[in-house]
Image (cartoon, rainbow, N blue to C red; front, top):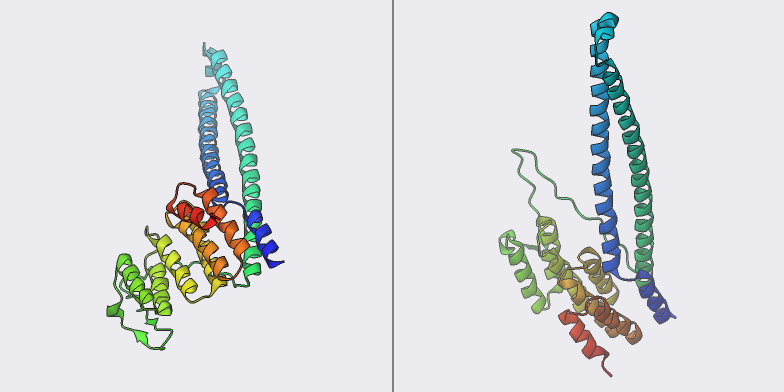
Length: 287
């Protein structure tokens, strides 16, 4: 029953890359529509100002002066034309605002749907959802940020700050050294520190992959699958996404769920057919 459940769940979750593509497309359309609304509103404001200026000029000249204007009919025609343009622009603005509202509602519905599918996966694996992303706090001018300490989870002793490199590459290298020595908990502590210390940097997908790898090395298959899934969801087009999906299959295989492992190997070949991970998946799928 558990094998059938995860198989159905994989089908439900679909392609993370397509979900990301749909979300990106909706976001781009929403941005372009919002810009167009702002442009139209600016045009409406400009047109209304022109009408107001012309009416003020006519009132200032007085009724006698207006009657002597040879172009009074042209003025009236211009005013009428501008008012017509205003009505057209106001209609376009209202229509675009309606479209924006519909896109927002549709986007919210898609997001709720995706969140429900993620919750299904977490529920099946029996893992708690990860904590929300930590926003880096910008210290006030003249105030030094509080130092952070990485504690060795195995010994309970703090790791000296000078032993942790300042760069993201350095932290990754140090974490790999600990992983190769079998100190996965220490490596994970350094990698988690790297996520907080280097937000937005290019190699954060590898950082997340290595975090998942530490759980895999410890034999916590449920947690490993969940952490590898974060790589796929957050960086679906990144170089580590196909390897993460392949590793999910490996985790299911080690867990004893060979049918589910095969589903993930097939998904690697389908979603990332040109990747090196797909070549490895084909070898594992071969009879």
